[in-house]
Length: 614
Image (cartoon, rainbow, N blue to C red; front, top):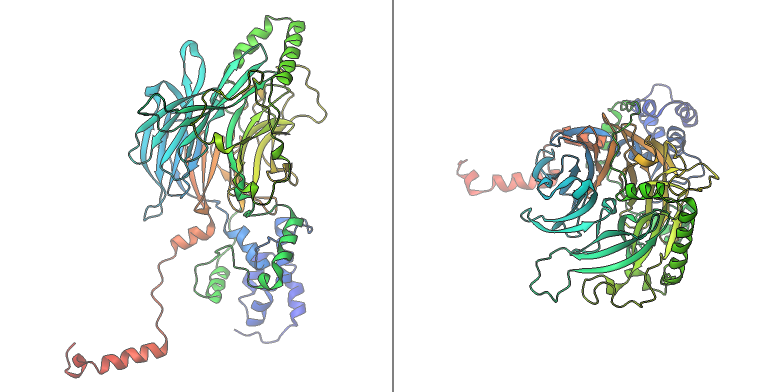
């Protein structure tokens, strides 16, 4: 259709600048001129910044090819449409974990089961393939799981109910071939969770109280297969022994492989992004491949016509905040609190001073290579152990970093730290990052370059005089971003989600990071999704109760799972994927005129055609 009286392009552009984006797309269907103006880059740049309320100082995503495409990515490719609700769990669902291929995921729950799910069904729905109850091993519940690198083994962490109602933890290793239980490993406290170091070895923890406020955390390397043929073959080896003061302990261990830092998925430093683009040169910029697959049409015109016919999505619903049944308190902390009541303040002060003196005297020197510049190529194989800890109070408020040397990657060699000097009881931390708040969640980016940390901040300028009385924590959850290459916090914290439980009832809220997005649960009955580059919240995912965990599919970041205290797992897909799933399969396109003519000519001269046979 053509317009009867043409308006100048500049005037049409001025009109479009005052319209919302959906009105601009509708107006573009009027005529060819308006369609061309409705795709103007300056227009979509203005619409992008105003609609998403992004500061003008933030540049466009480094691999985006146009402002229109970038607007469409944030609008159409966020997994915010609920497509399925899984109700097979009978109690609160605490954690979700995808396999590295994305073809399976596991779920842990207060019902004491770990369930395995299939994501590759023909109809696109997710189905349950296996369920294992850990109640027979005297577990209270399952709380965390993780697939090894080749997806052949599953680590499951849970709370073990021991004698006298004491609760420590245990880790089970399950084979993905026949779902058999291969080994069980002690894990204390239970919120160490455990993690894989490589395909065949996992890390667990143990805790020894050596005073009212002083303890020792031991981190162990365990072989997943413990059916050894000889008693001379080691299946366990001590990695680190670290002193804790002021009732703190080591928790939430995870492994970062820094060899991935050299090719990050996304640089969050805008200046570094600009430098990277300049280094690639102008020619490479012009031929840079499109990172986001935003359409399935064979031509751009068909893709645009399909977009223009769609109406704007409905606004996401909002829910009311809620409380939650508290998780069990920190393992062993009850006895510390009780013992403190029977000991005078002077005795406690003396004990703390003695513990600090012992720590300084009998602790190995830190590894200076962590923060010193590496020689070319040296940093590729570095592996770091990350965990939460503290030095002022029992609530975890620091991130500890410890380098794992190549000779520590296997259980072979000396056992129980036989290589140590008798004068060096403890290992030191190579680096510590203080968050100044209660840490309730951590997650690594897929390239292991950035660590995302959920925390509830302490009041500014607060002073902790009693380690058993930490400062009050904020209801707002801050999502910090730490660059593991520079070991510094990057940008401002993300904030949209909330939590309401106090310090002594505070529990873990698991987050997850994909190539372009980061997601987290919250106590306000919602999950949240942010864009990693633009630092903005893009979606709220509604549940009936606290959202404990979220997980992106490693194979497709437009698929997200969320787990809640409402005993359900919700499956979320992007509007684009939902639309494609509902679109009927297109018939094959007709061949070109030349190929069709040659085909007809061939058929007309074939013997069957000459003889009049079909």
